[in-house]
Image (tube, rainbow, N blue to C red; front, side):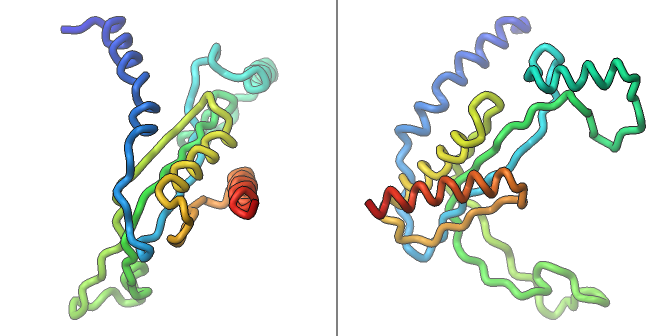
Length: 183
């Protein structure tokens, strides 16, 4: 049986090699018909008070001093979260589908035609960070995509939930990449 301290040491020691693993791993070549997908998202992570950034810590202290303990939505934890940036790059085979394969038609789906299966992500590369700035995580995702398609022959699809900050980072990184390719 491992003690808590030893288990923590083992986890930290094993995580050291993750970045190096992805650096030397060579993705399997794909055809031009296989789209390359970059997915960017943010995730709030509840933090211990001492791990909050200074501005968030001050907001939490101000809120506590004002006695604001109003009703919270399920899962809401004001002034206790830091945003992690999550990025994933993967290949996928196109999967043509009909509208009713995705959204059930009024009155239900007929059993005569079974729904077509959706696309499947393969050769996934994922990263997440609370420490590195979102700009760096997005740049890392684009670098991974470039290593998979250095000649930019494939269609690239970028999935994002529409958060303005993420869209700005993606546009900025795409413009930087295009500028580098043109020079």
